Length: 292
Image (cartoon, rainbow, N blue to C red):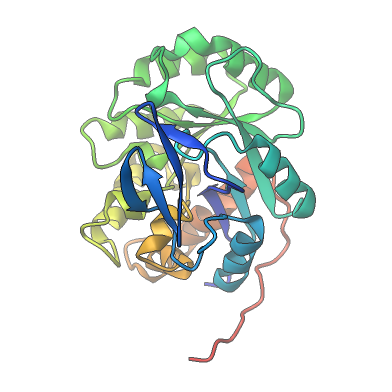
């Protein structure tokens, strides 16, 4: 499709230095990682140095014709604040970046566009206990990217935060953990004015079904019927989802479906994210012919 595309859920790291279940996550070479004592293919094997760099991301974005990307964070990767600031300095027009909230009072905001909250992994699961970070983001005009606990476990406390911070922009990640019971209640949060839903990890959640992910498309249609297509944003969860599919496939399964109109696809793939994240692209990226 010849439209502006924004990826609302991407990861970058210079060096993996995270944790899972209190155990370290670290590089094992050739895209593999020691994941708390178990070797996992964390990224495509062509990332043989285990650096998930901004340069590689931009190359993939250029080929898939993705104009911009939002760099979120995760505990399993470790805090990447410093690397993300360097990456944004180099690709300022194409990236929006999130600092990582780690349940401390000294969370970073300077130089960042938003704050990432891994809500499902917080020690204090009631989001009202973290009102300070939400209020500060609202005061500074930053967005919050939040991955909530499975199902509707945190929906009530998230709604309380939204009521307390009506001007706060919130992007709910992982499409509300769509494969778990109660996911529709996370989607329904987007009935609030400044709350949107992004689909980072959608192909991971429906991985067993694989391309072209018909049940994932059905989930998008269901979410559209709950909160409206103007509140939904496409995300890839690059690079972990790229261990079995290419980046361009993460776009193409949306482009090829017959269950969404062309206008709905344009809104989902980039139009809504342009508005939410404040990108200012004027036209799609050019087509790059390949050897096939």
